[in-house]
Image (cartoon, rainbow, N blue to C red):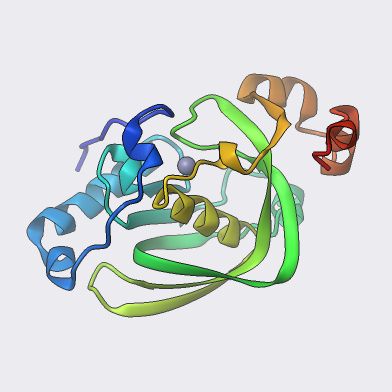
Amino acid sequence: MNIKLKISQAGEPVLRDAARPLSSQEIKSSSIQQLIPVMRETMHDAKGVGLAAPQIGLPLQLVVIEDRADNLPQEALAERARAPVPFQVIINPQLSVLGDVTAEFFEGCLSVAGFTGLVPRAFSVRVECLNERAEAIEIVAHGWYARILQHEIDHLNGTLYLDRMKTRSYMSHENFNNHWKDKSIAQVKEELKLSLYNQS
Ligand code: ZN
């Protein structure tokens, strides 16, 4: 298969609307069953670790995620609590935060192409949802996996990471790579003077 869908960019109304849940019958329908591999292909092609249906213009509570985690050095993986996540389909999710530990890292979005920003997220979450066979599943996730789930499920509620980021940290990927990528988050926050702007 080699069908790729166009990814909506910030400003498309669909990215700001609440998506609707799918019925079991719809999940098992050929249109959704055929859409899932196309979303997977689109996510891979864009080098993303998650893709929500609103990002391809469909206001449906359907997300695909997969983190191959093969593009980062070991120390970065450890710092971000990032480990491979196998391909997974998440439908009609309910997310709850577990505990009160948070983590801050730079995050990007295929719908805000070329940019990144520092986003605080819960370290641990629980997601109750349906899978691609309309079976109820429960996911308990920590670290980067929990971040991906929070980011993608936000898309189903019309929320972008832009709404949650420390705005002074917003920057192009190019400038992130040129100036910031080798610094600790604490150092970045200090140099960007986040505390002066109540963003620490
Ligand atoms: Zn996104």
